[in-house]
Length: 347
Image (cartoon, rainbow, N blue to C red; front, side, top):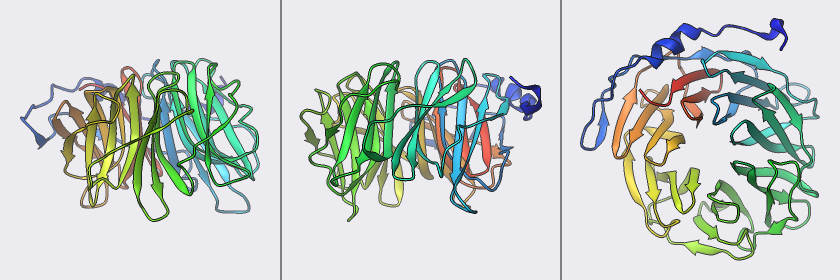
């Protein structure tokens, strides 16, 4: 790696965060933070807003963003080492790239979005600190969501013809994709969540143009689908993560948010209320998660949720809402539009 792209990003702050004390437990709800404050680090560019972050299971995280301002859209990439040091990342040369989604496995992350009228799929390799373009499913005009579990990945995109989203599967980490399968119930919807707990078991959350939320699951790789009933007050589902048929996600309930869990692939759910507005969720296990968003003052907010206990963590130098979060095995990363925060996965 070139020495001229290295840049220390306050690593001592992250090391200090690794020595935090134990959580104060409460029976339910939010409790005051018992951890030292976590510090935000400015992104390399303030003109390109960060939008997506992913972390491999070997604790290397990648953050990307794209901007439509100027003559043509531009892209920004950064990655962090397991010690929490953020470094500049060179992205592939691409015409007007837009990144909308990210998903990671053991040592790689897939980044999905669109170029002018085509699907865009890039792969970040944590062992080589590189991002390479991959061949996307043919005749697609934009990737809406990606899910990865080891080498098995799933992708939902918009087809060039017709108005139905399409599901594609990969068993080699994105090197090749199966023939696309149209999702018959998906006409006119936007995909808000996708997770495959195994190679063929996937759950998909969608939102219609009239803001109607729905959740569907497949047990055969998209050949057939089953609609799941969800609570009437749910308006969307995001940050879905499934392990076999056990899932955790972030549900919007009108003006409030909740962390929700299921042990039967969406037939029934339990809920943990969140005091502040949440934008994203990431977990190291289905019982231990980080939630990010914004507080009542409009600045960044981050909380740990262990089982049913919610503990807010004090943030410094995080002036704007946090928009995404991801976790590896021991390290997590949260991002605002111009801010990065490295977080130990456990206090």
